[in-house]
Length: 292
Length: 258
Ligand SMILES: NC(=O)c1ccc[n+]([C@@H]2O[C@H](COP(=O)([O-])OP(=O)(O)OC[C@H]3O[C@@H](n4cnc5c(N)ncnc54)[C@H](O)[C@@H]3O)[C@@H](O)[C@H]2O)c1
Image 1: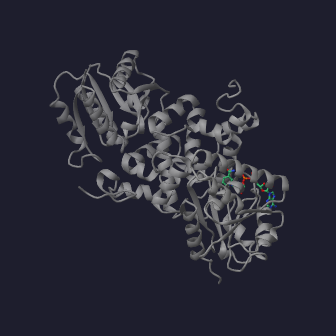
Image 2: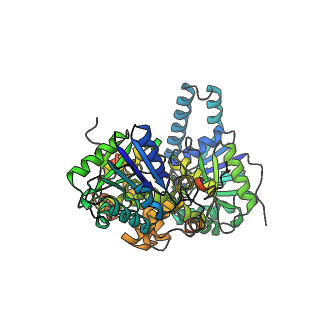
Image 3: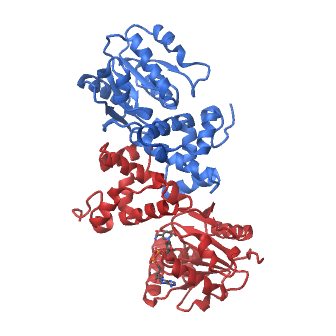
C-alpha cells in the first residue's frame, strides 16, 4: 500500500468555478504552488480575475500586505491540460457535481500524478467511496469538503472513504490546518456532518409552516431572537437558493433510503415549481424585487 | 408585580423563576426531577398547601415526562378549585389545548414556550389553547412581557416553534454520533463554523437537559408519528442513565463537578 505524502508543496485544483477559485486562492495565500485546471479558458481567466480582485480588496483593507497579495497571485498557474497536475502532491477536485465527470477525472488523474500523491474531492452530495473506486489507489482518495465562500469559511470536513488510509487523512488535516482552516473528520455518509445535521433546521420549520402554526416571518423571528441564530430557516433558504436547499434535502433523503426524518416538504417543491428560488430570483419566502 | 409559583423539572423552569425574581415578582418555586433529584412530583400538594393564599400566576414547565405534567395539573385542580389564576403551561411536551383538557379550568390554561439559555432570548412564544379565555391570554401576555421579553403569538402545537426545531437538531446530531460518523466535538465545531449556529447542538442539548430534549421528542412522536421523531439511541441511553447534561455533570460531554 502506498501511503500519503506528508510534505505537501504543490496543490492541483480541478475546476475553477465558485469553489475551485476559492480553494485555489486559499492554497496560494497559504504558500502552496497551485495548478488550477479547467476545461473552459474563459472561466479560468474569470477565476484569476476574481481571485486578483479579492486579494486586492483584502490588501486595501489592510488584511494582508500588497506583496503577500502579489505573491499569492504569482503562485497560481492556470492550465487547460490535466497532465500539468503531474508534480502535484495533493489534487483537490471541484468540478461539477456529476458522478460521471468525477469518476473519469479520478481515473485520469490516477495515471498522471505520482503514486504517493493524494486525490481529494470537494463533493457535497456524492459518495467519496464511489469516487475513490474509480481511482487506481482508493486508499489515497479522500473528501475535502470546503464551504462557500472558501476563503472565508473556516470549516473543512475531511471525509474518509471506505478505503482511505489514516496517513492520507492525517496529511489532509495537516494541510487544511496550514491553510488556516479548522478541519473536522467524518465518515463517508450522506450529507457528512453539516448538510445532514442541518436538515431539521429547515424541515421542521417547513412542517410548522405547513401545519399553519406560524408564518415564515414569525418562525424566523423566533429562531433569531429566541435562539441567537444569525438567520432563521426561511431567510437562510432564500440566501442559499430554495432549489439548492431542496436538492440537498432530496439527496440526503434518497441516499438514506427514504428515512422519514429527512422527508422533504411539498412546500419546497412548490416554491421551486413556481421559480421563486430566493434572493437570486428576486422572490422566495420573502420578496426582494421591490428593493432597489 | 405578582405572586408567582413556578413548578417544573428543568433548566427552563429554573430560568423562568430566576427571571421573574429579577423583574420584581414574588416567586415561589418547586423544582423536581432533572433539576433537583431530592424532590419528587408527589410533594407538589404539600408545596401548594404551604403557599401564601393569594397566588396570581401559575407557571408550569414539567417537560421530561407527560404523566408528570398531567400529575402537576391534577394537583393544581385540587388546590385551585374555582379559582381564575392563569396557568402558563410550557407546551414543550403537550399542546396548550391538551393541557387544558387535563385541567378543571381549561379557560385558565395558556401555552408558552422558550429554550434555555433565556439570557440569549428576547422572546417568548405565546400559544393560547382552544379553550383559553381572552382574560387569561391577556394576563399571560402581560406576565411574559413583564419578564422583559416580547411575547410572540403563534398557533398551538406540542413542542412550540423554536423548541421543536432545536430538539430535532440535537436529535440529528445524536444520530450522527450514534452512527459514529464523527466525534461530538467535531459535530459541534462543524455546525458552528459551517453554518453559523450559535452553539453546537450537542453542547446545547447538554445545557437544556437531555431529559427535557427527550421529553420534547417523545411528545412529538406521540402526536405526529414515531418514524420522524424517533429518539436517537445515544440520546435515549444518556437520558435513561440520568446523564442529563451539564446540570448532572455528564451528558454528551463530561463536566467537572464543583
Ligand atoms: N457551491 C457551493 O456552495 C459548494 C460548497 C461545497 C462544495 N461544493 C462542491 O464543489 C464542486 C464544484 O461546485 P461549484 O459550485 O464550484 O461549481 P461551478 O459550476 O461553479 O464550477 C465548476 C467548474 O468546473 C468546470 N468543469 C466542467 N467540467 C469539467 C471537467 N470535466 N473537468 C474539470 N472541470 C470541469 C466548469 O467549467 C466550472 O468552472 C461540486 O462538487 C459541488 O458539489 C459546492
